[in-house]
Every structure is written in C-alpha cells, then in structure tokens.
Image (tube, rainbow, N blue to C red):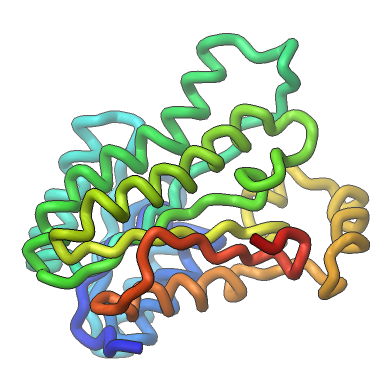
Length: 253
C-alpha cells in the first residue's frame, strides 16, 4: 500500500454511514479531506474536529449533487481548498423508496437515476482534471450487492442503477487509465447502522437476510471503509476496473 499522508481526498455523502466511516478512515490514514454533505451538519463537524486533532485539514461543502451547477461548484470549492485532488470517493446514492414496477412512473425513474448515476457522472467529470494533474490518483465508486443480484422487491430502479455503476466503473477505468487515474468500485451487501437500512430494512427482513449469509452476520460501515481506504492507497497500483464484493459470502464473483 502507498502512503496516504498528505493526499487530498473528496468524499461525497460524508455526513453519516459509509461515507462518514470512509472519511474517518482516510483521515486516520493521513489524508486531507473535502467532506461533501447534503443534509445534517453533525457528521461533518465531528470529522472536522477529528481532522484537527490529527493535524490534518478538512472542510465541509454542502450541495445537492443532482443540481449540475451545485455539483460543479462543490468540486471546484473542494479542489481549491485542498489544492488539488488525489482521491475521489463517489458515495452518494439511495433507494428513495420501494416501488414495484406497476408503481414506477417516469418522474420516480428519473429521480433514482439522477441520485445514483447523474451525480456520479457530474462529480467524476469535474474531478477528473484535478485527478489527472496529480499524476497517479484513485476513484472509488459505491455500487451494491443489489447491482449484482437485483435486490429485494421494490428496488428495481435502484438495483438497475447500481448495476450501471459497475459498468460505469469498468468503462471509466479504461478511459482514464492513460491519465494515471485508477477507477474501482465496492459492492456492499447488508450493512446495518446506515440511514439506508434504518429507513428501508425491517428487523425481520435483516434477520432473514443474515440467515442466508455464510459468515452469519451483517456487515458494518467499517467493513466497507477498510477496502475503500485500501483502494485509495493504491493510487499508483495496478488494480483498476475492479469491484470488491463486501457481502459475507452471499455473492462471489
């Protein structure tokens, strides 16, 4: 693993859950951070305090990343604060709500696509010149086990977008490789203690899922953060276009 000390990282959706755990992991590994959030300032404040205690720099940037102008401005502000970018973690995304096919209208379809894919495209597009200027850099995208297996009923559009993240990652890895930018993804399974599962997963559903996990437990946010920090630290490595599946053995590629 390469040293992350002094590397400059942008993490989207850093206010809670996986994003916050990733941001903390990167801080402890030595990164300076730009912390994007949409709602809830408590997480970014905690991370900024941690950064100060570690002798690192961190600043929070609020934006609705489905708004192109806001997304462009956020990346510009993050890169200006950090003096460039070495690492991008595309964490923003969500289910919105469970809807079966008969309940899906075009507005809902587009809303989920924008949240999970358009945001990723916009942030990556704007960050790429800064990552290329760094010479050897890393992008990590958040996919999902749902993108591999299709997800539970009511997650049709979400699962489709997360499957697209896997393809986005492979295609972008080929496109950006000549610029020294590696692009990888992680695909978490059942990760409890996040806003996503607190909102959309019942205890009964979680217990049933756990019974089918070979490791016989759900994951937690640190189970996801550790591989992301590893992929970030391999900024000059040989791994690109890959997806790490983090699901306790439910799906093995």
